[in-house]
Length: 485
Image (cartoon, rainbow, N blue to C red; front, top):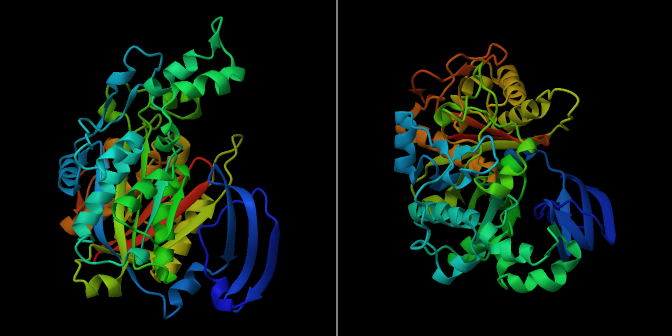
C-alpha cells in the first residue's frame, strides 16, 4: 500500500460490522484499512458502502512535519443566551450579565428545576437560505446555520472566490428531540384504552407525520444545510459526542486542512436542551436546584455549587491555512497551535480522576510546542457539578499550575454539543479585547478545586494563549490550544 495514502483518512467511525480489513505498517505508523456496508457512527445508524483508512500519526509528529500548513481562524459566529453576534455576546460577558432564567414553556409542568440558558426572541426567518429550508430545520439546525453564516460573513468567504471543492464543513450536534406539537397526533393515534400500543406505530402514526419530518431532527443536517447554502462541496462531517462535539469538530476540521483535503473549513457545534423531552430525563443529569435565583444557579468551582444548568446555543469558526487566508487578504483572528483528545471511562461507583483531561492538556501542549508558563488562561469546562469541577481543577493545577481560569458556563449553562464552540468564542474575543472575563457566582472558591479562578475582575489576556477544555459525562476530553494573531 502507498504509505502516503495510508495516512489520509475520513472521520473515524465505530464499526458494528465490516466485511474486510487489512493491517500493516508504514513509515508514518500503524494503520488499519477497512471496508464494509453497515455501521454505527456517534450513535446514528446508517447503511451505505464505506471504505476508510485509519492511520496512527501522533499529534506531536503531525505538528513537526514540515509540510503541514499552519491553520488560522478568520471568522467567528455565536448565538447564545447572552447575545447573538460577537458584540452583544462580549458586552454581556463584560457586564457580568447572565442568560440563565426560568423557562416559560415549562411553567406548570412537573419539572422541579425548570431554569436554563434560553435564547429569547430568536427568529431565523430572514437569515435562512434558501427560505424553504426552514420547513426541515429544527431549532438546533437554525441556531447552527445562523452562527455559521455570521462566521462566514466575517471571514468574507462568499466574496473571495473559494473553490467549492476545497471548502468543507464539520459540525457537532446533539441527538435532536422532536417538537411535541409535531408528534402529538401520531402518539395519540396509537393510544388504546389509555395506553400506548407500539404495534400500531407503523400503520397509524406515520400518516400523521409530515413526510419530511425526520429531516428536521437528524444531527448531520446542520453541516448539510450550511454546505448547501454556501456550495461547500468538500469534506462534510458531523459529530455527536455530547459536550465535546464542538471542539472535536474543530480539531477534525483542522486535520482536514493539514492533510491537504481543503483550504477552508467551517466548524463548530449546536445544542438545545431547553426542551421538555430533555427535562423528562432529569434524573440523568445533576441539575442545580436554585430555581429561586436562576442567574446564580451555575457556580463553577464555587463551594456552594449544587449542579449544572441546561442551555442552548451554537458557535462556529472559519478555519483556513495561513497561506490561503493571507492570499485573499483575510484578517486573522487567532491561530490553532495544538489539540488533543483523550478518554477515561467514568464509573458510577467511583469518583472520576480526570486523567483524560490531564492527558489532553499535556498532549495539546506538546503538539503546540509550549510550556505551561506560555499559557495565558484556561477556558474551563466548569460544569458546576461537585465531582466534575474537582476532577477538572486538579487536572488543570497538575498540568498548568497557577494559570488564570475562567468558566463561561456560569453565564449561559451547559449548551451540550454547542458548548465548546460558544466557549471558544470567549477566548477569541478575550484576545481581541485584551482581557479575560470573570466567572460568575464563584464567590467562595472550593478549596478542593485548587485553581486560580478569575472571579472578581477581568484579568489581562496575556500572553494571548488559551487552553480551551471540554469533557463529557461518558469520559471523553478535548483540549484545544489557540493564540492571538
